[in-house]
Image 1: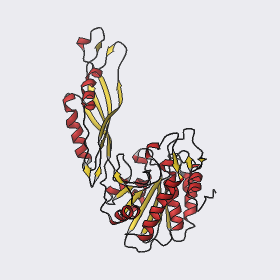
Image 2 (image 1 turned 135 degrees about the vertical axis):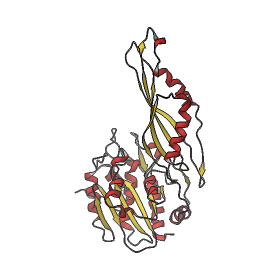
Image 3 (image 1 turned 90 degrees about the vertical axis):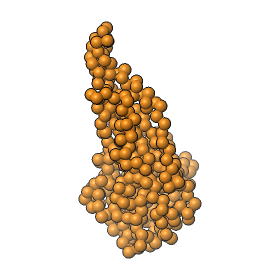
Image 4 (image 1 turned 135 degrees about the horizontal axis):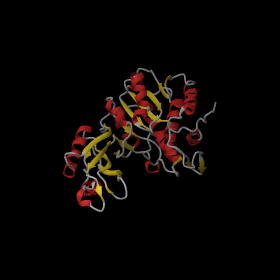
Length: 359
């Protein structure tokens, strides 16, 4: 069994990078983390599938949930940790082996926190939500996810990225009529009909609502197109897939209604618009006392989370949640993703301060 370094977040992150954990293949890293956590007498440890939940049971007034996913995207020639001075590169360095290292080191060192803590190390975040380890825990042991506020160690460069935007994908199928391309007037070209719809998307002006002081910016983008029958046939069908990112002042139903109304001028009665997947947004929840304490005591920048993360999962459970972790989010999933020693140390110090002093 691999022994993980202690007392050096930089070395610990490097060791975790060197443990392969592409989505659906987290068994090795889970076993290593479990062995480490079970040596800590102040924690109760439960395993649900390839997910680990370690908790203090001190009877404190507040419970903080710290969550992080153990999986990474497939490597792109960066499967091993590479250290260059105070910079550490490798798959997952940003998203989110640095966050996992921070959680593990906190679990090792903060044995008498001012708040109760739940550490959630979960699998399969980087793939379809149906496989997400948090859903597995919710189904089998939902009580293990209870808390007053949750922080996910997604990369934020040490800022609080509050809440998150929702996301949904639509498939819009436009109908035409086939004919020979030598006699196109006898048919109706479904691909040509995409022009009106694409013009609507191209001229769309995104909303930019400010919620709890956080400025969100919505988005509506075509991401995939299909169509065509043969080189001499006017196509009778064309499909376009559209992704919508919506701010947390709208529900999934409200966001869907907005998109349907926007696209309606381009659609005929026989056309179809179907939602193929949707995940809700999460409000910032900045009024939570623990989150306020973290921001105030450590002087953290607070901004909106423009992407989607599992803070929406916790928010749906009634647990206010935000993102806070080392790493540059713009580097996530790239071949050159990296984390700096100072980012790790600063994030760890802010969380130690919160756990030591509480509200």
